[in-house]
Amino acid sequence: MHNHRTTITQHIIEEQRRIQNATGDFTSLLNDIVTACKVISNLVNHGALIGVLGSAATENIQGETQKKLDVISNDVFIKSNEWAGHLAAMASEEMDDVYLIPPQYPRGKYLLLFDPLDGSSNIDVNVSVGTIFSILRCPDGVENPTKEDFLQSGTKQICAGYALYGPSSMIVLTTGRGVNGFTLDQNIGEFVLTHPNLTIAEDSIEFAINASNMRFWEPPIKRYIDECLAGKEGARGKDFNMRWIASMVAEVHRILTRGGVFMYPVDSKIKQQGGKLRLLYEANPMSFIIEQAGGVSTTGHERILDIQPNALHQRVPVILGSKNEVERIARYHQETSA
Ligand code: P6P
Image 1: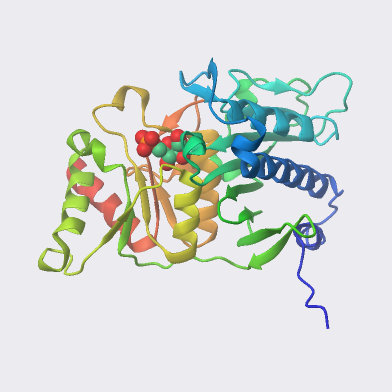
Image 2: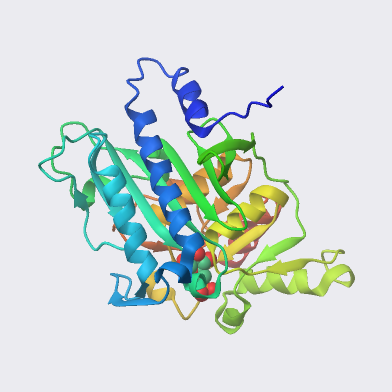
């Protein structure tokens, strides 16, 4: 007897059936996003064999040198999603301004935001990288969306997800009713449901932070990490473990799978830019996923999903993961402010 696995397409359509007067627009958009992730997975998996490693000798708006695969992956997302008539515009870490759907294609009611290849500094050293995406509604009556139309708080997202190109390629997705994980079955070229209803343990003994920034940290972060490092002889009375992959998608996936805390806090080195990670296409989609899995995601001072964005490429501090640990860190911030 063949053990039937639910494909991501079947899962999306079954989710759509639960939404009143759904037109199938959203389902079709998600399928085009999945196709883009399959193409990027294939490119990443071939790496040096097809000459896509190394730098593109160009810079993005963040002033970061782009990898060839950053540019290629961005183009894959554009080409996979611009033609079908579900989107009015797109925005990406790799593009300064919003990308309006060209006149030869119909426009739709959604806005797509994405980081096409997050953690791409890992690509040349063959460490996991990912794609992060977020779907918003285009404001009613807006024919030609501008940057302002993308400046919606994270609570307005109707879908968030990531693809993780690791030992296996996975897509993790939420549309507001929990979080589900799908693994790419290379034999049939489909993502199949392997991790239904992902939930994050409320407690954890594992934290992720770039410890090379320690001398720049603010007191609440320093206090939390010092207590973790003091181990069972210290205030926490237990030993902790540390991880840092320098790929947010991989860190978030580990936390969804076995709990933990991921921190990219603001510090004295990056204070003037407000943080390292981008709100609209990194922090917001990941925060939606984390909260839907029972975790918490905060700047230290406020819930990330509540932030009213003021710029397309705005950066924020990110502290997310296991509820009890993240709430402890937030408490340390409040105590310091008080
Ligand atoms: P650092 C990758 O560039 C990224 O945006 C996240 O995916 C990752 O968590 C972080 O930056 C890594 O930052 O300072 O350790 O290189």
